[in-house]
Length: 343
Ligand code: KG4
Ligand code: ZN
Image (cartoon, rainbow, N blue to C red; front, side, top):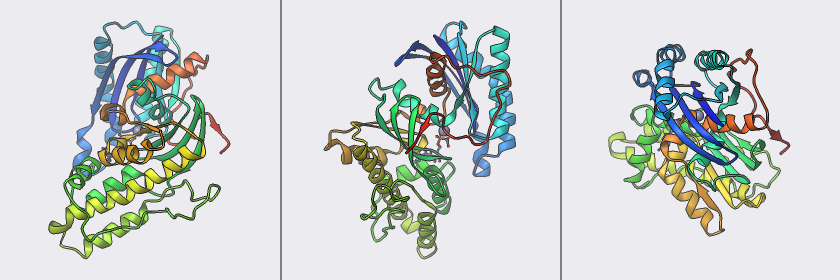
């Protein structure tokens, strides 16, 4: 089956073509157009994002079909939640019109389920059962994936998402938006020196069943960084603060992911979302888990950040189960992950 994927939930207009069955899937084309315009505002402006998607959607899809070498498509998969509603609507409307005109099925995909599938496009072994850590600009989810379509949500952030914490701390440090990659590079060539921040929501005496055993919280860490910035000479200490912040955040993510892999006896950990590009996170996760025989899979930056290939891949899974959306498919700002099983 050949699936056209479409993703417009935030500030990337993306289209992809994948082909295959089950876990044997080949990516034929992937086009991602990032909207640079938001940089000057220091964050994504929803109305501007929608308008930019509207301009980009047709050429981006046409380019993906050209790159795939054929416009023979069996179905269309499109992100319909969660995200910016105005932005999502551009992709959803286009996908429905395209599918209707061609007489092929359309399937709505949950953006975070897409992130769960992204790594499998590059690593044939990044398939269930596994422990998943999804860390993006809008979400931080720790999920036990028993099988595709069967997700046990273990933990989530109670305030800021991990990527949001990177972006806000970068702003405090006077670094450009989005801040994650800048902090990543700066921290790599800095030592934390006298700075050390408490690991947020992490205590040794936490037990499985405690509500904070798997949950995350990053707003306190952000405040700790703010206090450090206020009481320091920023030019002299920017690198050390960035390093200390990243160390605290990474320690927390690694420890909670290791707990989940241990509790559910998983031999694989799969990372996803933009923060999965963080070199220190990936390294620390591997160091921590390899001694226990757990393999850690991280997608390359192109598939870690928002892209339509992961949406096509998740869509293919649902299409193969016989699921279809109808032409009244709508866009939603938030929606629970489909396939949730009791924790
Ligand atoms: O998944 P994504 O592209 O978009 C959302 O769905 O939100 O994630 C974007 C987030 C931004 O917050 C960005 O700062 C962060 O991913 N990010 C990173 C790195 N690269 C991107 N954070 C830490 N280290 C990186 N290398
Ligand atoms: Zn995303």
